Amino acid sequence: MLLNIIRSRAAATVALALVLPSPLHAQSRPRPQRHTQTRAERDLADVARCLVAEDERGTDWGALLDVLARRAASHGMTSAGVARAYCAVHRVPRPSARQARIRALPDANPPPRLAAIYARALNAARSGGPGMCVAEHWGAATGEDYARAMRAGWTRVDCGSTRNAFWTVPAR
Image 1 (cartoon, rainbow, N blue to C red):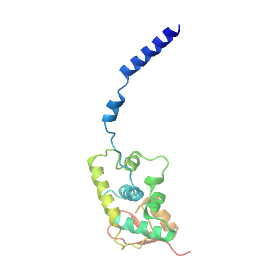
Image 2 (cartoon, rainbow, N blue to C red; image 1 turned 45 degrees about the vertical axis):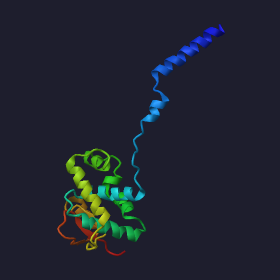
Image 3 (tube, one colour; image 1 turned 180 degrees about the horizontal axis):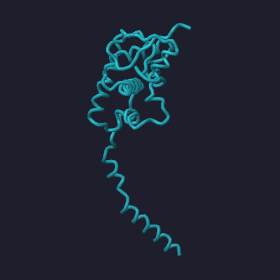
Image 4 (cartoon, one colour; image 1 turned 90 degrees about the horizontal axis):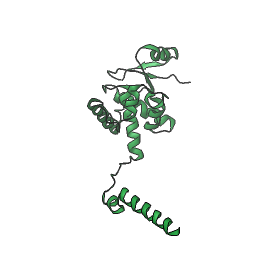
């Protein structure tokens, strides 16, 4: 009886050894190293995603970066923290298909056009804004965003040739 138990366990051990890869073989293949982003890289990526989501053409990026920097300074935050709090691409609970593609950058193997836009936005985020736009907020130049700003008594400011409207807020 004991001999049968030993034989069955030995047979099971041999069968497993034939099926499973050799530990020496497994060790001979190096595991691919996955790049982990630093906090600074993640922050730049979040600002770049905000830029892409707000204006793919890039005409508003300088003004947007100025607003993010101004709001960050006034609230004791980083520009990335403001981008995560302010840009819809970061805060909507159920992103649209476009927002989901932008949120997944740069890891999602995006279409070449979107990858190129993101690369430009990342460079813009690294450089920062030109410091010429005195706005505190931005929003769509038409529709509900525009109407809400007008009702609130905000003042539209000129930040160059932009797609969005840029605003200052009256002192409280």
